[in-house]
Image (cartoon, rainbow, N blue to C red; front, side, top):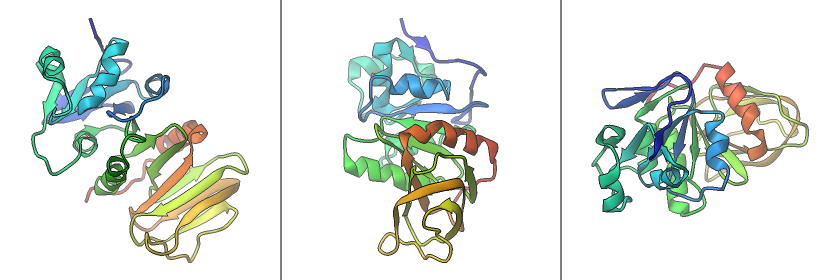
Length: 239
């Protein structure tokens, strides 16, 4: 039988929101590496699945604390076997499963895995959701990279030579220290200036004047990013 993931501080559910004092692992139905779930649970012990993401969990004998979605990605027999108290059904069809799940989780940080690689349109929709819910701190993890919304200010201790890419999802400006090519004075826009393949040359401090700047780093930087985001509580307000 499956074991509910309740490691560490027990999460709770209220008014349709999953509350956790610890970081949360959110698993989607996309491509998942063999060790990806363990990687995330070691850093974010409360497990939530976005709809079909639960299919990655059950073969490992793990039942997520909550499964969130409209459940159109789940076979009927699997859905019928899941405990009703673990389901949070959201029937509207105007948002993706990732969006539905992210906006119903309140935690210091969400580590999202299983949201890349399968379909590019779904992956782009995830980036859209990061901007639509800027008050929900979330790091999306792929097999090679991590992607997250830059907070108003972020300090990172990274190795020199690390790739540090910036992609604007709208007009945005910022400042930087510790990057080979400083961003001060640049006007970023998705149809204009972007910041692909910048490079770390020292301790990084980066700021953004609006919640529209995605940072893309190598997956090997995950622990530094998790530590930095946890240490710097300032974030964007909800839209």
